[in-house]
Picture 1 (cartoon, rainbow over the protein chains, first blue to last red):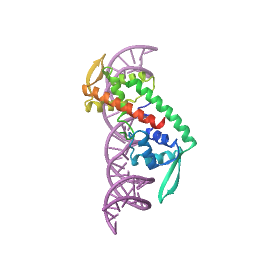
Picture 2: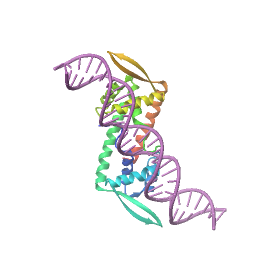
Picture 3: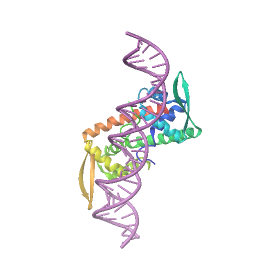
Picture 4: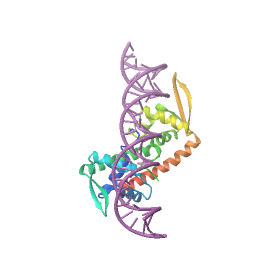
Amino acid sequence: MWSAQPTNNVDLLLMGVLRRGPAHGYAIITALRERSDGEFELAEGTIYPALHRLERSGLIESALESVQGRRRRTYALTARGRKEFASRRRAWQGYVASMQAVIA
Amino acid sequence: MWSAQPTNNVDLLLMGVLRRGPAHGYAIITALRERSDGEFELAEGTIYPALHRLERSGLIESALESVQGRRRRTYALTARGRKEFASRRRAWQGYVASMQAVIA
DNA sequence: GTCTATGCATCGTTCGGCGATGTGTCCACC
DNA sequence: GGTGGACACATCGCCGAACGATGCATAGAC
């Protein structure tokens, strides 16, 4: 049952990228842009806080590494995150279906 | 191009109902519930402000009437609203497609 | 006389998105 | 040696949406 919006599309997108393998923030932004054919252009002020949020809730975990002198924090889905992603994706599909039923 | 969310799903839903004919607030809530097979349960605190918003921006217009001693404000899509609905629905479909591309 | 459905409105909290801004590295080019 | 742009992360602060709570009013049922 929905009240207006499914819980957090941004989280779903981030998990959608990480499900294909670990990635760091900046790379996620790029991946999002590319996979969506240029449609998604998420601001840094959007995704970094979102990543922190997801990590706090245990759906992803991170490791700090250093590549060519540059710091980066690489994120990966946890087991719980993987399950949660599957569940939220199902929810999203349901949401889309309900949406279609109203606006189609 | 998206930044996280399409502009206002709630508006799209409301217009989606009104496109089938004028309706008043309470009836819209009911229609939403029924058309979505019980999935949408929008709070009054969500839809009344949203209707006011839509009216302020000229996408819908309202008339006060009295039915069996009860006041009700009936809303209808304006011509601009109809165009806007079509346009936002297209945008929504695009958004869904991009979403799928990332999470599918 | 109370409860439920119908009907509308608004206030206040909460939370997410995101623009702006700051910090730092590496590399190319002039 | 300076500048500019890609890479990389973090945080602050504003704005606006969602919505629970609340208040008000009528009609009809029990």
